[in-house]
Amino acid sequence: MIKKLRGMEDIFPGGKLDSRKFLKLADSCREVAEKYGFHYIETPILEETILFKRSVGESSDIVNKEMYHFLDRGGRDICLRPEGTAGVVRSFIENRLDRQGKVYRFWYFGPMFRYERPQKGRYRQFHQFGVESFGEGSVYEDIQTIGMAKEILEKLEIPYKLKINSLGCSQCAPTYRQKLLQFLESHREELCPDCQRRIETNPIRTLDCKNPSCQQILENAPKLQENLCSSCHSEFTQLKKGLEQLEIPFEVDSHLVRGLDYYTKTTFEFIGVGEGVGSQNAIVGGGRYDKLVEYLGGKPTPAVGFAIGIERILELLSPQKEREGVYLGALLEEGVPKLLEWAQKMRNNGEKVTINFQIKSLKSHLKSADKGGFKKVAIIGEEELKNDTIFEKEL
Ligand code: AMP
Image 1 (tube, rainbow, N blue to C red):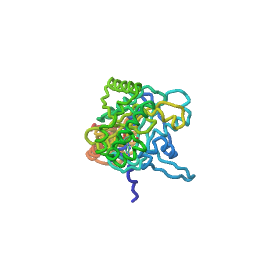
Image 2 (image 1 turned 90 degrees about the vertical axis):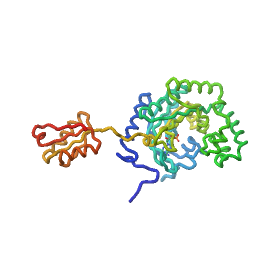
Image 3 (image 1 turned 180 degrees about the vertical axis):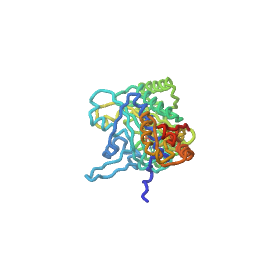
Image 4 (image 1 turned 90 degrees about the horizontal axis):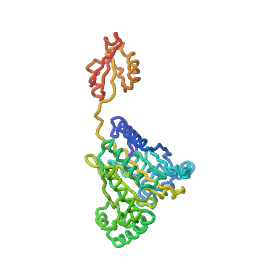
């Protein structure tokens, strides 16, 4: 038997990842995004590898270890996208939207690919729903964006915790980096080999190292939010105030970082809480990236966005309990030709109708309908056939 690749899942009704829940989840995300004035954008799943090297960063795990990249028949180095932002930014620039001086708000939905070690909540092919807003530098855009993610999670009844931080801007980030470097140098020997390497490649990434002993040492590291310039400081204060006004509970996590130069100011993460949440508990990751458009060759454009991990949320949704749809069946052979006709009538009335073409007793039909999770049973028997009626029963 030919099997699916490791870390890749089929999404089908009743499966581990239920396709009905999957679509409902996508619909909920889309509805909220459209309500906030975001419009759909679709970019190719395959892009040039260099795009991700530049935008996600050569020092990141994603680019270093996790990309599905290969040469195509023309010898081009291409890659299955590991995340959504890079492609959207490429498209924004390539289609010259950076030159319009307008605000653009996009949402996207689709599969992403990362060659990671599969486990609960971590797949090699997974889906993200994401939004990206271009051209609005106000911190209120950040608040609105976070509010949108919160609305999606609440719509789905997913309990969450929101963590926020500020990474500063090109004014204050370099000064902070120097301070952090000094601290790291003085603790070099105590850090894990990965963090020792990060001192050279990407010092800020030491802050979110998962190694417990590094975490303990970094407790005493200089804190980002205490080293912001006055403008970043006041924006961070506004952000916190704005979230309070929207009644969005949050905590400041000084170790929440992105670690690339074009990520600026606001950064945030929603983590799932409660039963069923495994070690992969991050469900939404986002923040501002005011330097990325320019970095990829576009006109300087402030931007902010987030991405939701669909599979992680699917795993947290309670199983579908609500009964749904109509089960339609016949008790005798002569009733079968009538089934399609009745189904059409009901479908024209907006009902979801599933026909069972097998002749069965009423009891047996009822049992099948109950097992199938239907809300209503409609049956054609001898009597109904004669009077051109239908027998209906709610389950
Ligand atoms: P990131 O692009 O790494 O910030 O991830 C954004 C969100 O995508 C995370 O919060 C997760 O919910 C989800 N995610 C990231 N990697 C995976 C993966 N390998 N499998 C499933 N979901 C993922």
